[in-house]
Image 1 (tube, rainbow, N blue to C red):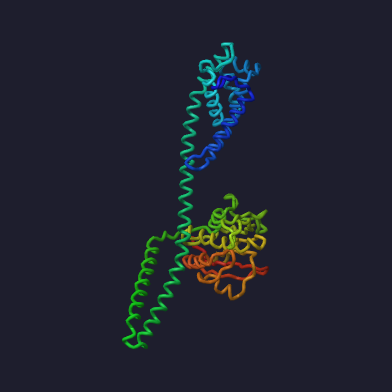
Image 2 (image 1 turned 120 degrees about the vertical axis):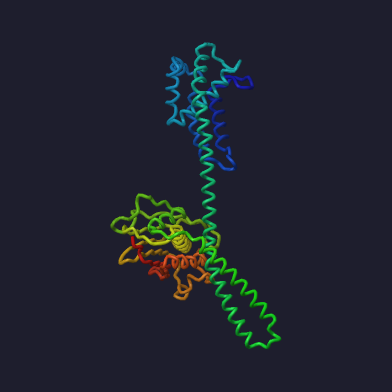
Length: 404
């Protein structure tokens, strides 16, 4: 085959050119992102391109076998790849190389049958190549749409997390304002009238801020989702998946010994408070087979599990990376336990662990733990923190089981 520069391309040179084209396409960005589909498409192109380069390289037996008839060539071409997308890809490569070889002065074979063979390749490849390119365009559009929707969903989850964390902040600020208004009322009685001008202004601003918080609370309640029967095990699996673990959907329960055959690996979405790299955390699951169901909003329950798991994983990351998750359903009670192997915690710290202003453990968020208490109350449940026997903390959440 003759290149654009007029030089004859050897078999090796053609393979080098095809390989370089492959590398260039693999690095090609789509809308600023590297598409997995593009990489797979190029990989499927390679078998057909290699075979065709081999045939054009002058291997007579293979070329003669392919030149007997068009169906034989198509059969060989299809054997060079696996699956329909690869067939179309090989056909499109054959089309590109064949048309290039058929251009005036570009063909080096004197026998007319080689010309007829290339013509047959081009005729057969044209519909398949067009179909392949159309499928690629549609697939890329669908993939980009899926990626966009996934990014939007992730953004909505982050906003929902921040909204949930803002609830205990508003509650704490409202308590502060109530205390401030009470003290200003006492001072108004104690101070002389000429010293009350500044006190009146403080009281006015405090009342305005309290009214704003009340408006925020009413707005949030107005947009609450209806309460339905939700599965705690499903919420736990969804939370683990959101944090990077892979929990099979067809394994809703654990074996009879109460533990999974092997620990699941959970990768932290962030490092510890000192900014170190994310560390792998081993999760031991022990989920009841009794289908623990509660009345509430599924996304709220899933967010509660995410916050508890993230806190446990963050605390355990520097202590060997071990946490345990257990769900039980007995005597009309549904219980969720999340235990970490983090550093020991004093009884005084345990008593204030769910307060947003408390000093949290390294790798944890006091705001998220305070939000856990808010969500638990929304489900009419209770939450507490206990010291583990081997160090660390066990979070225990209890609810009344939903009546089906």
